[in-house]
Image 1 (cartoon, rainbow, N blue to C red):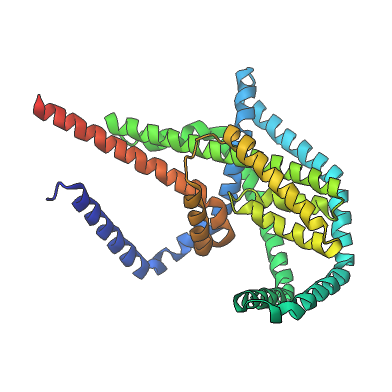
Image 2: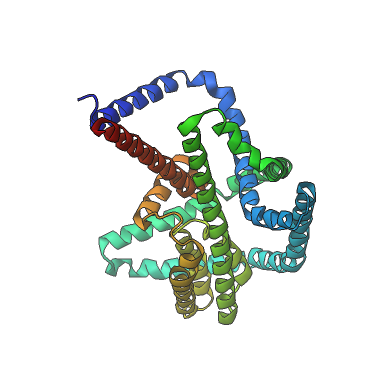
Length: 361
């Protein structure tokens, strides 16, 4: 019985539960380590994202006999130039639309109150469940208004954290560009024989999955945001650039992100001209269809091979566990875990096949 797979899996799960239980009881010992990890995890993630976005450029430059230090300097200079151009071209438009949004905030608030009053007058004719949903949404919006002051304080805290990130992110980014070939050997050189080859292959698969996901997701988000921006401009929707930038970041969240991105656009369209809501919905639908049928299949392909329902479940679970950061990293973490489990299963099957062959021989 001890050789049965189900028995070994059950024992493994029980041991994992016991380890987690005792770890939680002595977690205070690891508090300083956890604080340090929390401080560096976000800069490390951002540095890793920048690395995977620029690694193809570095590979191209070095294939043209440009030394490592030269490729790093060219990439850094290129990022600075792109950022400067982006700020000089997009910055004034973003600033103008933000100022316009702030100036029109009282008007938008009054329109929203009028819209809420209109729905309030219709509540008596609505089903009880829909009335409850409207009341819940209203309470949520009022809570947002009450907590606006707290958000300002949190924004200031985030600003100083951003300064800290500006120092650490380039450090991790340059370090990865310089020594990225050395990371995997440090790990798989700890092993020997077939186990070393298995660890080497697993690390290579993890690297390929992360590269495919990060590069593909950013390219898809950029294309979608561009399509949405063009559509909003054609409609004449106010704050088109701000809404497109918001969509750029929300589209980094698979499946759910695009629908989050369209919510503020629908609200602004309804407050300006209710008929614009139809236009916004059409633009979103067209962009999503182009993404689903043309962009994602050609960019991402089958690199992740994760069912949409699984992705949604991961996002919801990761969001409850780690907030917005969990939503962003949940899918790639799951993809990495899936690669590890698949390689373990393949290795186990290979060993079992070899053992069976030896016995039969």
